[in-house]
Image (cartoon, rainbow, N blue to C red; front, side, top):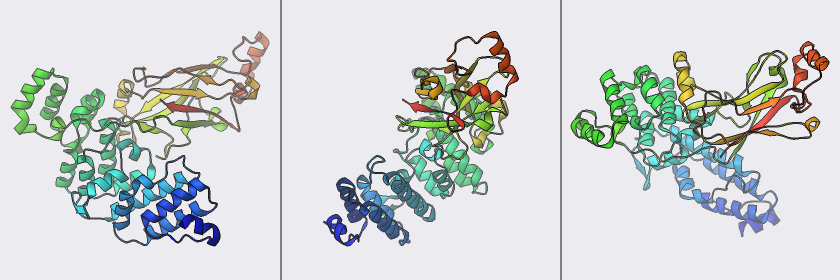
Length: 411
């Protein structure tokens, strides 16, 4: 009824979170011009005028009424604003992480606002908010059974971001946080090679040896180790189940591009993902930063290679001697596509699905011809001329609007 009244008055008469969300949903369904936007403004004004977590609790209680990303054009920006507001209020709340507010556990609000490790790592605003959480709130988040991840490696990276941003946190608080890690479920590469480098983890050499032995032991041997040493090392490091698994980018088609200017400066180029909110052009999957990498020879070679390249995330960037462990990493199954322009009859280059078993570090997923004749051998005179012209001429057939572009689809 409120939506119908809006058609005549141009005003949203609804009050309260639930009423506004229901009005918004109906207005979107009926395509009432201006009503969706008016509801969004009214709801955010209501939220911003609240000094407590009351509105966050109301939004949480009505979360099923929030629009899906494809419900209407304004939905993605609106949901992003709501999530940002809720994270800000949770950061400002300095109560104990395990508390309960009006029958809603604070930990449940935290998991709703920070639903998974990859969701945080691939959103610069969410990562900044997480770095501002109190130690108690972050501990409650990590301890919650609903907090999801693509791998425990991503949880370790997320905690490393917080540790780096809160170097002055009390030692006891930091210790309580690291004990929430589930080290048994780390990848072999992170568990065996990376952990000894992290002094803030407080993992002794003997504990690390026990962890690696325990992780690789057969079930019967693992049971004996657990029975014998539980009183010594009975923490979530060894005893907790794996967290709920989520593939954050699953089904999403991510645009990437390399500028024309980049092509003249290097023969090894990294593309930037348009939808990378982490601010460095990469996406974070399974605890590593992934980029599309283009490699070509600066001679008369007529092909170039396009693939995925993994690198250690920012908190571990100083560990250059461990870059090799990226070659042992696992990528989610995905498909890489390179766009062609009209000169090449619009035929795009596409690899088959890359599976998690693919050899990565550098995946040579696409080999494509340079110059626009679609891979046919050039006449000797033309091939010789190829060397003498500017390098940018070799990319005819791929450049669109001053850039090479394509997509990465996580399957």
